Length: 278
Image (tube, rainbow, N blue to C red; front, side):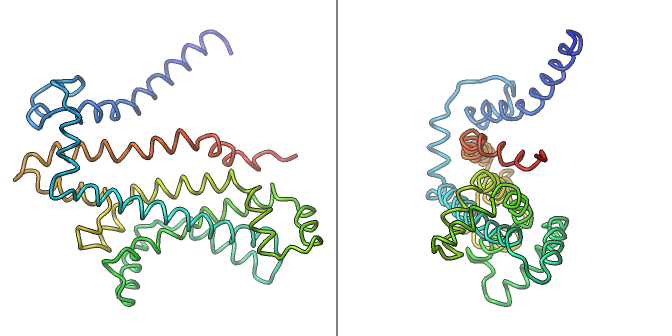
């Protein structure tokens, strides 16, 4: 690469980095301000920082409803992502390693599910949950979160490329059952792909707004996204909610940032696995 090309590349990457990081910086600055300073001071610089006081108000407002929303989000995203990852692993491994009638048709059906927008399925899901009296319950958000067609697709590709048939056959000869072979051999080899699916699913559920909006009417069941939106809707009548909404948004991105930093090594490995033919 020539010196001129390096300068242009660096300049472009710098602009892109500023574009993505500027909203995060604004959020950090805004989370330290009072409601008055939020609208009356420079948006890109601090003004009498009081982050701790804002956080105390955030977690004690309305008897600590924000903490409940945070725990709900952890429940929806954590349990939903874990179950989705395990189900995707089983489905992808089965499609990759077992031959049965209609296997390719099933896989094509899964690929069709990848193309369907989630919003198009939300209303039918609500009608289904209402039929089983599960609307406005934790299950109404958890059960749809356990399904990931993209995860099944990625697991099949990864299992076909990374799990050797000879290793599975050796485990069977040693007397291991099919389920034990899957748990003790295949799952360990598929770890990078599973971490990638867990991360994608966790972030998707954590940021999901439309599904909880349709499914839930009890504010005690809200995740953070829906709770903050409800606060923002009343902010014109109760101005302190502007600051609480900004502070809540700041806190809500912290778990995602930690997960991205901790899991990025596995994430990058999973994305590139199988991309090169040996």
